[in-house]
Image 1 (spheres, rainbow, N blue to C red):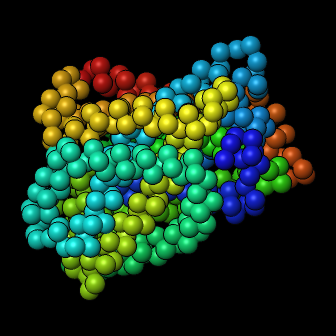
Image 2 (cartoon, rainbow, N blue to C red; image 1 turned 30 degrees about the vertical axis):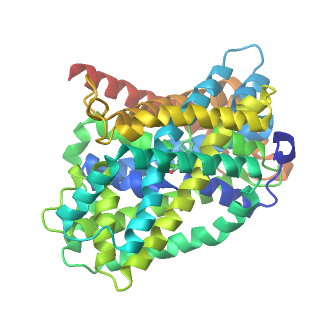
Length: 456
Ligand code: TRP
Protein backbone atom coordinates (compact mmCIF):
# COMPACT_ATOMS: atom_id res chain seq x y z
CA UNK A 1 0.00 0.00 0.00
CA UNK A 2 1.58 3.31 -0.89
CA UNK A 3 1.13 6.54 0.94
CA UNK A 4 -1.29 8.04 -1.55
CA UNK A 5 -3.54 5.05 -1.73
CA UNK A 6 -3.77 5.04 2.02
CA UNK A 7 -4.79 8.70 2.36
CA UNK A 8 -8.30 8.82 3.75
CA UNK A 9 -8.28 5.07 3.94
CA UNK A 10 -10.23 4.58 7.13
CA UNK A 11 -13.57 3.47 5.78
CA UNK A 12 -15.54 4.33 8.87
CA UNK A 13 -15.20 5.72 12.32
CA UNK A 14 -15.14 2.26 13.80
CA UNK A 15 -12.34 1.23 11.41
CA UNK A 16 -10.27 4.16 12.54
CA UNK A 17 -10.99 3.60 16.21
CA UNK A 18 -9.93 -0.03 15.87
CA UNK A 19 -6.69 0.84 14.12
CA UNK A 20 -5.81 3.58 16.59
CA UNK A 21 -6.82 1.42 19.53
CA UNK A 22 -4.78 -1.38 17.97
CA UNK A 23 -1.79 0.91 18.03
CA UNK A 24 -2.45 2.01 21.59
CA UNK A 25 -3.32 -1.34 23.15
CA UNK A 26 -0.25 -3.51 23.30
CA UNK A 27 2.63 -4.56 25.50
CA UNK A 28 2.52 -1.12 27.08
CA UNK A 29 -0.78 -1.98 28.74
CA UNK A 30 -0.28 -5.57 29.74
CA UNK A 31 3.49 -5.87 30.20
CA UNK A 32 4.50 -2.24 30.90
CA UNK A 33 1.71 -0.91 33.09
CA UNK A 34 1.82 -3.53 35.88
CA UNK A 35 5.62 -3.33 35.88
CA UNK A 36 5.52 0.44 36.33
CA UNK A 37 2.85 0.19 39.03
CA UNK A 38 5.10 -2.30 40.81
CA UNK A 39 8.12 -0.03 40.58
CA UNK A 40 6.11 3.05 41.51
CA UNK A 41 4.63 1.49 44.63
CA UNK A 42 1.04 0.67 43.75
CA UNK A 43 -2.15 2.70 43.93
CA UNK A 44 -0.51 6.12 44.23
CA UNK A 45 1.17 5.51 40.89
CA UNK A 46 -2.17 4.48 39.37
CA UNK A 47 -3.72 7.80 40.42
CA UNK A 48 -0.87 9.83 38.94
CA UNK A 49 -1.14 7.74 35.78
CA UNK A 50 -4.86 8.45 35.44
CA UNK A 51 -4.21 12.16 35.93
CA UNK A 52 -1.57 12.07 33.17
CA UNK A 53 -3.90 10.20 30.80
CA UNK A 54 -6.95 12.39 31.16
CA UNK A 55 -5.53 15.83 31.89
CA UNK A 56 -2.31 15.82 29.87
CA UNK A 57 -2.44 13.10 27.25
CA UNK A 58 -6.06 13.16 26.12
CA UNK A 59 -5.86 16.82 24.98
CA UNK A 60 -2.60 16.01 23.21
CA UNK A 61 -4.18 13.07 21.43
CA UNK A 62 -6.85 15.44 20.10
CA UNK A 63 -4.12 17.89 19.06
CA UNK A 64 -2.11 15.23 17.20
CA UNK A 65 -5.17 13.94 15.35
CA UNK A 66 -6.26 17.47 14.39
CA UNK A 67 -2.80 18.37 13.13
CA UNK A 68 -2.59 15.17 11.10
CA UNK A 69 -6.03 15.55 9.56
CA UNK A 70 -5.59 19.22 8.76
CA UNK A 71 -2.22 18.71 7.05
CA UNK A 72 -2.83 15.22 5.61
CA UNK A 73 0.88 14.62 6.07
CA UNK A 74 3.24 12.40 7.99
CA UNK A 75 4.75 14.06 11.07
CA UNK A 76 7.79 15.89 9.65
CA UNK A 77 5.79 17.34 6.74
CA UNK A 78 2.80 18.06 8.97
CA UNK A 79 4.87 20.61 10.88
CA UNK A 80 6.54 21.89 7.72
CA UNK A 81 3.32 22.60 5.80
CA UNK A 82 1.47 23.98 8.83
CA UNK A 83 4.23 26.47 9.63
CA UNK A 84 6.55 26.76 6.61
CA UNK A 85 9.95 28.34 7.02
CA UNK A 86 10.34 27.38 10.69
CA UNK A 87 12.32 24.62 12.37
CA UNK A 88 9.26 22.94 13.87
CA UNK A 89 9.71 20.00 11.51
CA UNK A 90 12.50 18.92 13.84
CA UNK A 91 9.79 17.75 16.26
CA UNK A 92 8.81 15.30 13.54
CA UNK A 93 12.42 14.17 13.29
CA UNK A 94 12.50 13.53 17.04
CA UNK A 95 9.35 11.45 16.62
CA UNK A 96 10.87 9.39 13.83
CA UNK A 97 13.92 8.66 16.00
CA UNK A 98 11.63 7.72 18.90
CA UNK A 99 9.74 5.31 16.63
CA UNK A 100 12.95 3.53 15.68
CA UNK A 101 14.25 3.54 19.27
CA UNK A 102 11.03 2.25 20.82
CA UNK A 103 10.60 -0.46 18.23
CA UNK A 104 14.16 -1.66 18.89
CA UNK A 105 13.30 -2.77 22.42
CA UNK A 106 9.58 -3.38 21.92
CA UNK A 107 10.39 -6.13 19.42
CA UNK A 108 12.48 -7.91 22.06
CA UNK A 109 9.55 -8.13 24.49
CA UNK A 110 7.22 -9.13 21.66
CA UNK A 111 9.69 -11.94 20.93
CA UNK A 112 9.39 -13.19 24.50
CA UNK A 113 5.61 -13.11 24.13
CA UNK A 114 5.75 -15.35 21.07
CA UNK A 115 8.07 -17.79 22.82
CA UNK A 116 5.68 -17.98 25.77
CA UNK A 117 2.86 -19.17 23.50
CA UNK A 118 4.93 -22.28 23.03
CA UNK A 119 6.16 -22.52 26.61
CA UNK A 120 2.67 -22.34 28.11
CA UNK A 121 1.07 -24.61 25.52
CA UNK A 122 3.65 -27.35 26.05
CA UNK A 123 3.85 -26.92 29.81
CA UNK A 124 7.57 -26.11 29.56
CA UNK A 125 7.13 -23.34 32.07
CA UNK A 126 5.87 -24.95 35.26
CA UNK A 127 6.61 -25.49 38.89
CA UNK A 128 6.82 -23.15 41.83
CA UNK A 129 7.59 -19.44 41.69
CA UNK A 130 11.36 -19.92 41.94
CA UNK A 131 11.34 -22.42 39.11
CA UNK A 132 9.16 -20.23 36.90
CA UNK A 133 11.36 -17.21 37.67
CA UNK A 134 14.52 -19.19 36.96
CA UNK A 135 13.01 -20.40 33.69
CA UNK A 136 12.35 -16.80 32.64
CA UNK A 137 15.85 -15.61 33.59
CA UNK A 138 17.48 -18.48 31.75
CA UNK A 139 15.31 -17.94 28.69
CA UNK A 140 15.96 -14.21 28.31
CA UNK A 141 19.68 -14.78 28.90
CA UNK A 142 19.94 -17.09 25.91
CA UNK A 143 21.20 -14.73 23.22
CA UNK A 144 20.79 -16.79 20.06
CA UNK A 145 17.18 -17.82 20.56
CA UNK A 146 16.14 -14.31 21.48
CA UNK A 147 17.88 -12.70 18.54
CA UNK A 148 15.90 -15.08 16.32
CA UNK A 149 12.60 -14.22 18.04
CA UNK A 150 13.26 -10.48 17.76
CA UNK A 151 14.07 -10.82 14.08
CA UNK A 152 10.89 -12.84 13.62
CA UNK A 153 8.86 -9.97 15.11
CA UNK A 154 10.58 -7.34 12.98
CA UNK A 155 10.30 -9.34 9.75
CA UNK A 156 6.61 -10.05 10.42
CA UNK A 157 6.05 -6.34 11.01
CA UNK A 158 7.85 -5.47 7.77
CA UNK A 159 5.81 -8.05 5.84
CA UNK A 160 2.57 -6.62 7.17
CA UNK A 161 3.58 -3.09 6.15
CA UNK A 162 4.72 -4.26 2.71
CA UNK A 163 2.31 -6.98 1.80
CA UNK A 164 -0.86 -5.09 2.47
CA UNK A 165 -1.96 -7.92 4.76
CA UNK A 166 -2.82 -5.01 6.95
CA UNK A 167 -6.43 -5.23 5.85
CA UNK A 168 -6.34 -8.76 7.19
CA UNK A 169 -4.81 -7.61 10.45
CA UNK A 170 -7.46 -4.95 10.78
CA UNK A 171 -10.20 -7.43 10.16
CA UNK A 172 -8.57 -9.86 12.57
CA UNK A 173 -8.32 -7.25 15.29
CA UNK A 174 -12.07 -6.77 15.13
CA UNK A 175 -12.30 -10.28 16.52
CA UNK A 176 -9.08 -10.33 18.53
CA UNK A 177 -9.61 -7.16 20.53
CA UNK A 178 -12.93 -8.28 22.02
CA UNK A 179 -11.43 -11.74 22.55
CA UNK A 180 -8.48 -10.25 24.40
CA UNK A 181 -10.84 -8.18 26.53
CA UNK A 182 -12.87 -11.29 27.30
CA UNK A 183 -9.81 -13.30 28.34
CA UNK A 184 -8.59 -10.44 30.50
CA UNK A 185 -11.90 -10.28 32.32
CA UNK A 186 -11.90 -14.03 32.85
CA UNK A 187 -8.34 -13.88 34.19
CA UNK A 188 -9.22 -11.00 36.50
CA UNK A 189 -12.16 -12.96 37.89
CA UNK A 190 -9.91 -15.96 38.49
CA UNK A 191 -7.17 -13.84 40.08
CA UNK A 192 -9.63 -12.06 42.36
CA UNK A 193 -10.91 -15.32 43.78
CA UNK A 194 -7.45 -16.61 44.79
CA UNK A 195 -6.45 -16.64 48.45
CA UNK A 196 -4.42 -13.53 49.20
CA UNK A 197 -6.11 -11.57 46.42
CA UNK A 198 -7.42 -8.90 48.78
CA UNK A 199 -3.87 -7.97 49.74
CA UNK A 200 -3.09 -7.41 46.06
CA UNK A 201 -6.27 -5.44 45.63
CA UNK A 202 -5.34 -3.17 48.53
CA UNK A 203 -1.89 -2.61 47.06
CA UNK A 204 -3.49 -1.70 43.75
CA UNK A 205 -6.34 0.46 45.02
CA UNK A 206 -5.32 1.97 48.37
CA UNK A 207 -2.81 4.74 47.71
CA UNK A 208 0.17 5.50 49.91
CA UNK A 209 0.57 9.20 49.19
CA UNK A 210 3.98 9.45 50.80
CA UNK A 211 5.36 7.80 47.67
CA UNK A 212 4.46 10.91 45.69
CA UNK A 213 7.35 12.80 47.27
CA UNK A 214 9.57 11.16 44.65
CA UNK A 215 9.43 13.07 41.32
CA UNK A 216 10.56 9.90 39.55
CA UNK A 217 7.04 8.53 40.07
CA UNK A 218 5.53 11.40 38.09
CA UNK A 219 8.09 11.03 35.33
CA UNK A 220 7.48 7.29 35.07
CA UNK A 221 3.69 7.76 35.05
CA UNK A 222 3.87 10.46 32.40
CA UNK A 223 6.19 8.41 30.19
CA UNK A 224 3.98 5.36 30.63
CA UNK A 225 0.86 7.35 29.68
CA UNK A 226 2.47 8.68 26.49
CA UNK A 227 3.79 5.24 25.63
CA UNK A 228 0.52 3.45 26.27
CA UNK A 229 -1.53 5.93 24.24
CA UNK A 230 1.00 6.01 21.36
CA UNK A 231 1.53 9.74 21.80
CA UNK A 232 4.40 12.17 21.59
CA UNK A 233 6.06 10.89 18.43
CA UNK A 234 3.58 11.65 15.70
CA UNK A 235 1.94 8.25 15.49
CA UNK A 236 -1.48 9.83 15.97
CA UNK A 237 -0.52 12.63 13.54
CA UNK A 238 0.04 9.93 10.94
CA UNK A 239 -3.18 8.09 11.79
CA UNK A 240 -5.07 11.40 11.83
CA UNK A 241 -3.78 12.15 8.35
CA UNK A 242 -5.80 9.19 7.05
CA UNK A 243 -8.94 10.41 8.79
CA UNK A 244 -12.03 11.79 7.08
CA UNK A 245 -13.52 15.12 8.06
CA UNK A 246 -16.81 13.40 8.75
CA UNK A 247 -15.35 11.61 11.74
CA UNK A 248 -15.46 13.30 15.11
CA UNK A 249 -11.92 13.44 16.45
CA UNK A 250 -12.97 14.02 20.03
CA UNK A 251 -15.36 11.10 20.14
CA UNK A 252 -12.82 8.77 18.52
CA UNK A 253 -10.04 9.93 20.83
CA UNK A 254 -12.28 9.31 23.83
CA UNK A 255 -12.87 5.75 22.67
CA UNK A 256 -9.19 5.08 22.10
CA UNK A 257 -8.08 6.57 25.42
CA UNK A 258 -10.94 4.84 27.26
CA UNK A 259 -10.24 1.39 25.79
CA UNK A 260 -6.52 1.72 26.34
CA UNK A 261 -6.96 2.72 29.96
CA UNK A 262 -9.50 -0.03 30.57
CA UNK A 263 -7.09 -2.69 29.29
CA UNK A 264 -4.22 -1.35 31.41
CA UNK A 265 -6.34 -1.21 34.58
CA UNK A 266 -7.61 -4.70 33.90
CA UNK A 267 -4.05 -6.00 33.52
CA UNK A 268 -3.23 -4.63 36.96
CA UNK A 269 -6.37 -6.22 38.34
CA UNK A 270 -4.96 -9.55 37.21
CA UNK A 271 -1.29 -9.22 38.09
CA UNK A 272 -1.52 -7.85 41.64
CA UNK A 273 -4.20 -10.13 43.11
CA UNK A 274 -2.52 -13.10 41.41
CA UNK A 275 0.94 -11.94 42.46
CA UNK A 276 0.05 -11.42 46.11
CA UNK A 277 -1.56 -14.84 46.25
CA UNK A 278 1.99 -16.20 45.86
CA UNK A 279 3.99 -16.30 49.10
CA UNK A 280 6.91 -13.88 49.20
CA UNK A 281 5.76 -11.86 46.16
CA UNK A 282 7.63 -8.57 45.77
CA UNK A 283 6.01 -6.30 43.16
CA UNK A 284 8.99 -3.93 43.14
CA UNK A 285 11.36 -6.66 42.09
CA UNK A 286 9.20 -7.91 39.20
CA UNK A 287 10.80 -5.82 36.47
CA UNK A 288 10.40 -6.86 32.85
CA UNK A 289 9.72 -10.44 33.96
CA UNK A 290 6.66 -9.59 36.06
CA UNK A 291 3.93 -10.83 33.73
CA UNK A 292 6.06 -13.75 32.53
CA UNK A 293 6.34 -15.13 36.04
CA UNK A 294 2.98 -14.22 37.59
CA UNK A 295 0.79 -15.26 34.66
CA UNK A 296 2.14 -18.81 34.21
CA UNK A 297 1.50 -19.36 37.93
CA UNK A 298 -2.05 -18.10 37.45
CA UNK A 299 -2.64 -20.40 34.44
CA UNK A 300 -1.45 -23.26 36.63
CA UNK A 301 -4.38 -22.69 38.98
CA UNK A 302 -6.96 -22.92 36.18
CA UNK A 303 -8.55 -25.96 34.58
CA UNK A 304 -7.27 -26.08 30.98
CA UNK A 305 -4.73 -23.48 32.00
CA UNK A 306 -2.17 -24.42 29.37
CA UNK A 307 -4.55 -23.81 26.51
CA UNK A 308 -5.95 -20.72 28.14
CA UNK A 309 -2.42 -19.41 28.67
CA UNK A 310 -1.37 -20.14 25.12
CA UNK A 311 -4.47 -18.37 23.80
CA UNK A 312 -3.67 -15.42 25.99
CA UNK A 313 -0.12 -15.09 24.63
CA UNK A 314 -1.42 -15.45 21.05
CA UNK A 315 -3.74 -12.50 21.59
CA UNK A 316 -0.99 -10.52 23.29
CA UNK A 317 1.28 -11.17 20.31
CA UNK A 318 -1.37 -9.85 17.94
CA UNK A 319 -1.90 -6.80 20.14
CA UNK A 320 1.86 -6.25 20.04
CA UNK A 321 1.98 -6.56 16.25
CA UNK A 322 -0.75 -3.96 15.72
CA UNK A 323 1.50 -1.70 17.80
CA UNK A 324 4.78 -2.54 16.04
CA UNK A 325 3.25 -1.77 12.64
CA UNK A 326 2.23 1.67 13.91
CA UNK A 327 5.74 2.24 15.26
CA UNK A 328 7.37 1.31 11.95
CA UNK A 329 4.76 3.23 9.95
CA UNK A 330 5.93 6.60 11.27
CA UNK A 331 9.56 6.47 10.04
CA UNK A 332 8.38 4.70 6.89
CA UNK A 333 5.88 7.45 6.08
CA UNK A 334 8.59 10.02 6.72
CA UNK A 335 10.96 8.41 4.20
CA UNK A 336 8.16 7.89 1.66
CA UNK A 337 7.29 11.58 1.91
CA UNK A 338 10.97 12.31 1.12
CA UNK A 339 10.63 10.37 -2.11
CA UNK A 340 11.79 6.91 -1.01
CA UNK A 341 10.14 3.89 -2.49
CA UNK A 342 7.99 2.30 0.21
CA UNK A 343 9.61 -1.11 -0.07
CA UNK A 344 13.12 0.29 0.20
CA UNK A 345 12.13 2.40 3.19
CA UNK A 346 10.65 -0.57 5.06
CA UNK A 347 13.65 -2.79 4.35
CA UNK A 348 16.22 -0.16 5.31
CA UNK A 349 14.38 0.68 8.53
CA UNK A 350 13.92 -2.95 9.47
CA UNK A 351 17.65 -3.53 9.04
CA UNK A 352 18.42 -0.47 11.17
CA UNK A 353 16.02 -1.48 13.94
CA UNK A 354 17.39 -5.04 13.94
CA UNK A 355 20.92 -3.78 14.50
CA UNK A 356 19.75 -1.48 17.29
CA UNK A 357 17.71 -4.26 18.89
CA UNK A 358 20.65 -6.63 19.32
CA UNK A 359 22.24 -4.89 22.33
CA UNK A 360 18.78 -4.84 23.97
CA UNK A 361 18.35 -8.56 23.37
CA UNK A 362 21.78 -9.34 24.76
CA UNK A 363 21.33 -7.09 27.79
CA UNK A 364 19.11 -9.58 29.60
CA UNK A 365 21.93 -11.73 30.87
CA UNK A 366 23.64 -12.93 27.71
CA UNK A 367 26.38 -10.28 27.76
CA UNK A 368 27.38 -9.09 31.22
CA UNK A 369 28.67 -5.66 30.18
CA UNK A 370 25.33 -4.84 28.51
CA UNK A 371 23.32 -6.15 31.45
CA UNK A 372 24.56 -3.47 33.82
CA UNK A 373 25.84 -0.43 32.00
CA UNK A 374 28.30 1.87 33.74
CA UNK A 375 26.98 5.21 35.10
CA UNK A 376 23.28 4.48 34.55
CA UNK A 377 23.46 1.11 36.29
CA UNK A 378 20.82 -0.60 34.22
CA UNK A 379 20.58 -3.03 31.32
CA UNK A 380 20.72 -1.57 27.80
CA UNK A 381 17.04 -2.45 27.24
CA UNK A 382 15.97 -0.45 30.30
CA UNK A 383 18.13 2.46 29.18
CA UNK A 384 16.35 2.48 25.81
CA UNK A 385 12.94 2.36 27.50
CA UNK A 386 13.90 5.22 29.83
CA UNK A 387 15.38 7.45 27.14
CA UNK A 388 12.54 7.05 24.68
CA UNK A 389 9.49 6.58 26.91
CA UNK A 390 10.30 8.77 29.88
CA UNK A 391 12.12 11.53 28.04
CA UNK A 392 11.64 11.62 24.28
CA UNK A 393 7.85 11.08 24.32
CA UNK A 394 7.00 13.69 26.99
CA UNK A 395 9.36 16.20 25.35
CA UNK A 396 7.76 15.45 21.99
CA UNK A 397 4.33 15.88 23.59
CA UNK A 398 5.39 19.18 25.16
CA UNK A 399 6.53 20.52 21.80
CA UNK A 400 3.38 19.27 20.06
CA UNK A 401 1.19 21.01 22.68
CA UNK A 402 3.11 24.27 22.25
CA UNK A 403 2.96 23.98 18.49
CA UNK A 404 -0.77 23.28 18.31
CA UNK A 405 -1.74 25.67 21.12
CA UNK A 406 0.42 28.64 20.17
CA UNK A 407 2.11 28.32 16.78
CA UNK A 408 -0.63 26.77 14.67
CA UNK A 409 -3.05 28.24 17.20
CA UNK A 410 -5.79 26.69 19.30
CA UNK A 411 -8.39 28.58 17.27
CA UNK A 412 -7.21 27.05 14.01
CA UNK A 413 -7.17 23.64 15.62
CA UNK A 414 -10.72 24.16 16.91
CA UNK A 415 -11.79 25.14 13.40
CA UNK A 416 -10.39 21.79 12.23
CA UNK A 417 -12.08 19.94 15.08
CA UNK A 418 -15.45 21.47 14.27
CA UNK A 419 -15.20 20.98 10.48
CA UNK A 420 -18.35 19.91 8.64
CA UNK A 421 -20.66 21.22 11.31
CA UNK A 422 -19.36 19.05 14.16
CA UNK A 423 -19.85 20.44 17.59
CA UNK A 424 -17.18 20.62 20.26
CA UNK A 425 -18.82 21.47 23.55
CA UNK A 426 -15.60 21.57 25.56
CA UNK A 427 -13.69 23.74 23.09
CA UNK A 428 -12.62 26.49 25.53
CA UNK A 429 -11.57 23.87 28.07
CA UNK A 430 -9.51 22.02 25.48
CA UNK A 431 -7.84 25.27 24.38
CA UNK A 432 -7.00 26.07 28.00
CA UNK A 433 -5.55 22.60 28.59
CA UNK A 434 -3.46 22.51 25.43
CA UNK A 435 -2.11 26.06 25.80
CA UNK A 436 -1.38 26.17 29.51
CA UNK A 437 -1.98 22.99 31.48
CA UNK A 438 -0.26 20.44 29.21
CA UNK A 439 2.95 22.40 28.57
CA UNK A 440 3.32 23.56 32.17
CA UNK A 441 2.56 20.18 33.71
CA UNK A 442 4.99 18.37 31.42
CA UNK A 443 7.67 20.99 31.93
CA UNK A 444 7.20 20.83 35.67
CA UNK A 445 7.57 17.05 35.75
CA UNK A 446 10.61 17.10 33.47
CA UNK A 447 12.39 19.80 35.48
CA UNK A 448 11.61 18.14 38.83
CA UNK A 449 12.91 14.81 37.60
CA UNK A 450 16.08 16.30 36.15
CA UNK A 451 16.76 18.13 39.42
CA UNK A 452 16.19 14.96 41.40
CA UNK A 453 18.60 13.08 39.12
CA UNK A 454 21.38 15.60 39.48
CA UNK A 455 20.86 15.97 43.19
CA UNK A 456 21.20 12.23 43.65
N1 TRP B 1 1.04 2.07 22.63
C1 TRP B 1 1.69 0.84 22.34
C2 TRP B 1 1.61 -0.05 23.57
O1 TRP B 1 1.09 0.34 24.58
C3 TRP B 1 3.10 1.04 21.87
C4 TRP B 1 3.17 2.01 20.74
C5 TRP B 1 2.69 1.83 19.49
C6 TRP B 1 3.66 3.34 20.79
N2 TRP B 1 2.87 2.97 18.75
C7 TRP B 1 3.45 3.91 19.53
C8 TRP B 1 4.24 4.09 21.80
C9 TRP B 1 3.82 5.20 19.27
C10 TRP B 1 4.62 5.39 21.54
C11 TRP B 1 4.38 5.96 20.30
O2 TRP B 1 2.05 -1.16 23.56
